[in-house]
Amino acid sequence: MLKKIGKILFITLGVIGILFLILVIIAMVTDSQETMPEETGSGESAQQIEAAAMEYDEEALREWIYDGAARNCMSISCNIKSDDLSINDIQTRLNEMVNEFYVSDPFFAYTVETVNTTTWDYEDYAKVELSYTYNDNPIPFDQLPRADDKNELLRQLQEQLNAGGTSYVFLLKGRVSDEDVAQITRELNSNNVEVAAESSSYIYYLTVGAGDYDLVRIELNYSVERERLEKASEEMRETLDRMAQEIRDRGIGDRLELYRAAARAVIASAEYDDDTRVATYTESLSDEQKIMRSAYGAVVSGRTICTGYAMAFKALCDRLDLPCWVVSGFNGDGPHAWNMIELNGETLYMDCTFADTAYDEWFLFMDEQELADADYYYSVNQLCPWAA
Image (cartoon, rainbow, N blue to C red; front, side, top):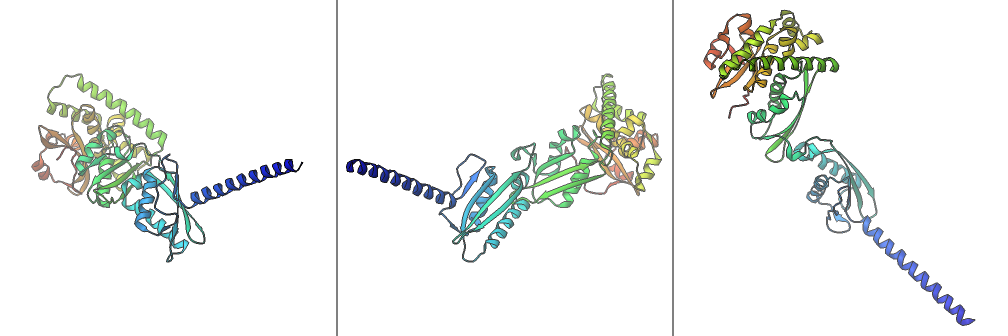
């Protein structure tokens, strides 16, 4: 009997010992997990910044924050010791580092939507957790258009322009100013000829890159009701496609004559509209007049102003694979729009508006000297997509 009791007691003590050992191991694992940097969301192992609770090191923390974004982590955490900074100070510094990335690093600004910082105050250290959310970008960062100058950029954006794109994100080399972005926006706006209205406003964002390239976002906005704009754009494109096909069917092989045929087609289709011109100056355009200012006015409604002539001519040239760009500036004292073209390596200028209203084709195929003699000039440095 005593032997049996002793055996039961021995087994019981053994079980208790094993349970105690398991509890010790669980406590050790839990403590280890709480004191090491962690990350979730990418499937990769956590980036370690040495020690269970690291001494406060701004450079190491910057690398840690950036690495979390680069790995597409949903959250990362670590423990920080500092005798000089309170937990609020640490949280403030971390938020400042995140904001620095937003204004100085193109990759971070493009990729990361928000970073939320949470801190816990323990006796010997502060635990910090960063939670990331990411922008739903249709184009990966490494596939964004990247150009060394503005003319190269315009060449890269041609495909988006030809598709009637209204959102542009790109990387431009060198220090890009707000004035640079505004000028590029004006160029994109006036040459976005596949939409049946000029954009009445635009939004742009600029992130000054820490490296060689700055990140630029441009959104063209249209104040015309969306359903009306889409219907007008579709009708306009169908008309332009038909006009281009009629020109192709004539079998014109010479590029100069193709340009002339496109200009004459616009001139035959359009008539200058003084009411829209006055409404433009007085900023009292109706939705229909905003549409008439585009290529729609020239080729569908048959009434437009200089912008409509220029945009319609470019839209036809695009369909005929002829280089063409809408130019904005002045003629005499009045604002005006016309076109530049590239013919046999030379940049020439076409003004379908004046060729129509003055009944004079002298305004077609002007060179630089003739342009100056006729009192044309630019309000800003004109960009040219095919220039070096």
